[in-house]
Length: 231
Image 1 (tube, rainbow, N blue to C red):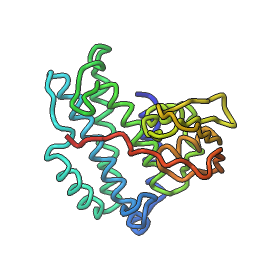
Image 2 (image 1 turned 90 degrees about the horizontal axis):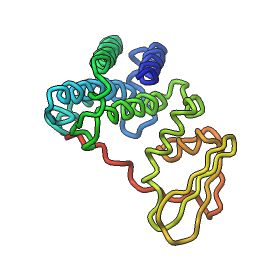
Image 3 (image 1 turned 135 degrees about the vertical axis):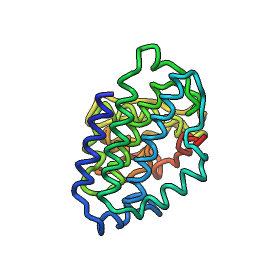
């Protein structure tokens, strides 16, 4: 929870570099401006608070009230709000989420939620990913090279299922002791090497700060992002 709180604070610091004009400019995510990213972070925090509070009652509820359609509508409409309003809403949503988590016991963190059919603990890890990766997507100076090392390693572990099906993928960091073989393919092993944070950025579908080398003719095509259902 401490790491998520640190990421939350960092996002607010990045927002403070914006004004309304920059808020409406393109983010690093195709089709989204920075306002879309901020509204998504607001809604995502509320959704994870909703999961935690329902779990405390022994209930399983949808990630977003109204499902994917309502999630998309909220992002599209909320992106147009003034920056000051978005920032205040984000601050309050993040605070409410952390407050809800602070009431959980060790046993409560293991309660089941509908999100990924997982545990409350898994929603905290998911929120960490949301905050760190979308902080990069805001495109206001925070880059994958700025990610904490433990976040880069977590992202690599979470995204390991994106490994190609037909080949064996070997990730090797050139600035760290990290090395990991991924996939169950029986074809040729393809190695991709570079800084550990660049490996994490590539696996997350984001641009890297440094060059990645590969033993193949080009970087392998990764599979889809692990599904993040709205229900």
